[in-house]
Image 1 (cartoon, helix red, strand yellow):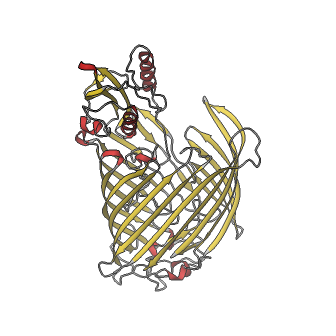
Image 2 (cartoon, one colour):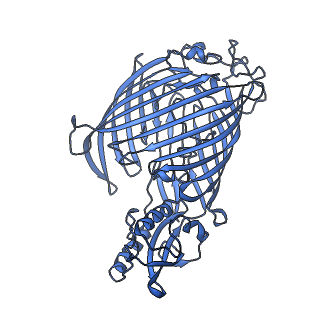
Image 3 (cartoon, helix red, strand yellow):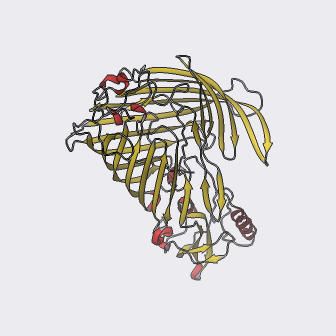
Length: 548
């Protein structure tokens, strides 16, 4: 029996910083994963790359005090300030006044005036209102929501102050975040069109992941020069992985912007491990995949629930004896190709598109709605490898209220997830789809089912309430789960260059099923699951954080 321990985010707040401590351990191949920045709203998926990959909501006491003070002031002032509770924003209704001026004022967490770092026009440009316009409460609220969603802003409010000739001054009051940040965790949020160790894939079956013990962190500066720019460095290291990712982002109006990155990643990846037969390099070592490159992307929300990113990425990919070796292995010990080019170094240039449509009723514990992730990558042939392919992938999750059974009051939810992808053209083994593992088919090790040119993966999971208890002044709802997972490479294992799955005698398809306990806590869902695969092997998984 294999025992895996996976965890996500513990949250601390000190001086306005967010500290995240996620953890993951696997007994057979020890793994410590540290998911990185999260998002709390789909319209800021690019900007919220400075919080944990498990979605989180920040709420500080000073903000609540300030909100209460503003509510008391509301009764006495005709143009009242915002009432802010858990980011529930309101604005003055107005009486058809003309705006004489728009001003930005900065306060600290206690509501005291301070000198701000952000340039005024960075805030003002989020509003579709200008001096001389008639005040419109709907437009004011839309603009205030966009300001409040900016990562550099901790809290925002809007008031109207009387001016001459029955006009008003529209005042936007903001509490900024600290410009320096540090977090344990290295993963950026979706959608992103760049490549690198910090970039989440559309589907869990992507080969670009390493096995074994690993840890990561990200730090950097936001709001550089008051222009809503960010420069960050992500690092990861462990038993079978080493990587860095330098990222620069310029955020523009309405949640749009562009990003530039440089990445260097090295790891033992699942396409070259797992299966009934162990295949190594000619020198008897595990193949290490080295990826060096970078890219540029443009991201923006296309609707309130639809975000997308388009970019161009370059990678130089090689397979070596270990993390720091200069010895390149173009073939394994059986003579199978590990790369496309004969010299063992492939140049890979791709145009990448990624999108997410999120219609869930909650990002923390969804009980209805859906989320759809999709992507397309088009390679442009360059170098000796001359790689030409089109890769399509999609990931859809539906949450359905379904009252089958339960032991107490609470939501009963059927979760259905289906993922699929295909590569048309050349299929390098290091960019193929790998199947099996806790995020694929529970009961199998990572990559143990197969590595294919195409794949399909499906999961059905039923969640039901069991009981509740209170721990450390935190109400915890405990529920149970039943699940079934299935994945197949659709017989495409021998279409991958070098046939890594065939060489390692991977089955190509498989299913797993089991049950679990799921507790909803302030640090995220805590899951304990037991899975059995169709070959009779079993797996116990403990994890903090959701699967979908």
